[in-house]
Amino acid sequence: HFDYDSSELSNDDYQTLQAHAQFLMANANSKVALTGHTDERGSREYNMALGERRAKSAAAYLSSQGVASSRIETISYGEDQPVDTAQNEAAWAKNRRAELSY
Image (cartoon, rainbow, N blue to C red; front, side):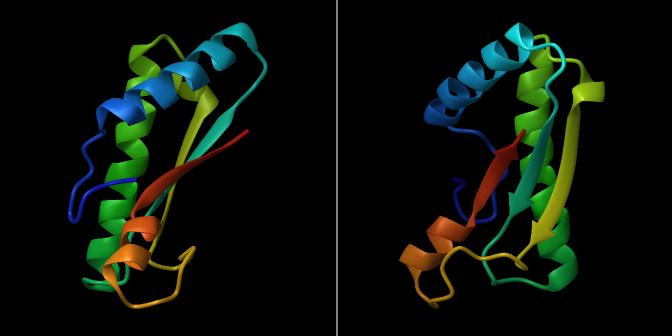
């Protein structure tokens, strides 16, 4: 999860991504898709770009840990796939995220 208007990874994110990097290094045939998401605030264009930056932040960390970039796909969904449709800070915080899929 990300802070408002940010694509910077937290210390917890680094720990989580480190575990994924280790899995990917041990499983050479596995590929991962990183999807970036935002809350609904901001224009559609801005949120698509922010979602892309979030996915790429996670991808850059995996690459820095030795995972080949050819095994990583980044996708931005912007505000289009919220996990919580309420319009409050708690919901927005849940929606500001990057997800990994193998």
